[in-house]
Length: 299
Image: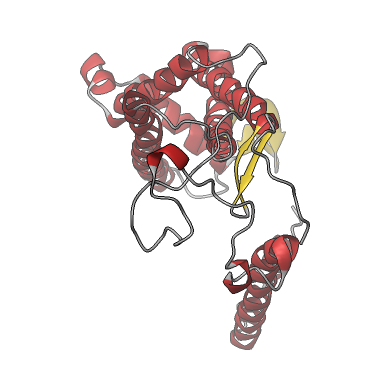
């Protein structure tokens, strides 16, 4: 492995014990992702107010979660002096709120899907025998004037809209969907407040370096000073580096093994499952031209 010099006097980088605790560039990436969190949150709220942008709500929500993940990832390597307990508490609301709100909205989506499917099923059961159609004054299909073959997905979405529009104030306010919005706002406001309380002047530096505490514990080497007046810096390299699981492969090799390895294993298992499932379907005669087209990705 490479032999980096001590970063004790380096304001851009802190490397010790073969570990990284601070990178100046990561701080600015962290700020950018935090702004993405703020902006996607604004977009998610606005999309619920403006009907024409309602379809973007789910995408703003996904952007919020992705931005939060990367904001969290970049925060792991911008350590200087830690975080105040008050800030850590706010992060409980940020991450905990996002987690709970996501679970809640999934319950809401499942319930809406169930109600819409039940309503569509009832309407189809009550329809006269013949081709399943929907009213359409501007088109004709299969010789049925003023009718078009039913778009089931559109019909289900239409029913969801009808159900949502027919709710009373109490049903809207005292609902898990409203709870989702309130909890997500709590999550969002805590990260937004943190953005404007952070250093955005551009003069961020990695200005601390760890030392061994003056304690007698198994984690502190005998060579470390227990005198507060002469604290011992952590060495640049871990003296037991050769015992670490990634020592033989190296950092790059270890990263490749933990990404390409699982992907290859999953591909092999998926191929085997797909092969045996397809063979069983052929033997039972369950394959059809429509099924083959669907499996190949054809419309």
